[in-house]
Image 1 (tube, rainbow, N blue to C red):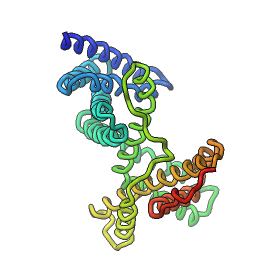
Image 2 (spheres, rainbow, N blue to C red):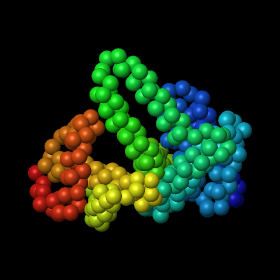
Image 3 (cartoon, helix red, strand yellow):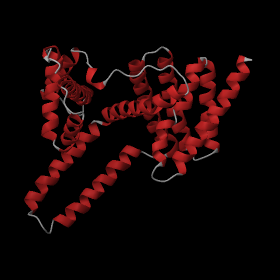
Image 4 (cartoon, rainbow, N blue to C red):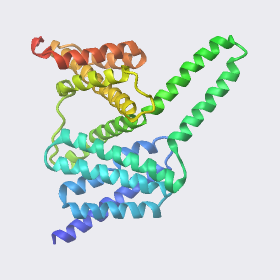
Length: 311
């Protein structure tokens, strides 16, 4: 009886997944938004049933995704299935933060598999093609601006842009990780109200203002910064690993800084709009981001929160 119920529920959830996949593939503009809902059927099935059945559901989803769309749907189905599986396992254990971390890792691994798969099976290198397109745009801009600016000044400006593009190319691993984290966080927030509506007991994340990262991050940040400042070959593995880890730690320290701002405004009874405005202003002004990162370092290194009295 239980096995029959599991098969029936799996068929319903698989049908739901295929509908969401078709909508995300063929519906213009808003279609990509439905990508965030694709892991939901796998999350729900993982919470309710054993692992072997979930693996079968993912396998079936991958096969059917090819029959109802382009071959790229196979990679989308694999990403949705793996991330949904990991998130669902931790949801079942009532470990929501672990679900975010584990889901981020699963999503990142899936992105890497998707990237490698697109190269080997489709002969499409998304990263390389994007950088080629960017370089072509820069060449066109250079030819247009050459008649309005001095050659020496223009060469200097585009030399800085070339260095920026080269630096961005080094950060592909970090971009994959950050994309995986932000995607998993978005999946959590769109899935949580639906799961609760279905009476699935999932713990909410602690408020963002209460987020506290390990103090050891400061030391890792200091070590990677020292390695970058040393005269290391830019093409070496050590330099690439240090620069990627350093940028990722900067991202985490930014989160810590924003968390402190939300905490401070909450304790002082300030409007919720204030930290939100600070966030959007910082996205426009890099100097503000630098100050918030320093605030994150101070918040980790010193017990500032304990000294803030509630208004």
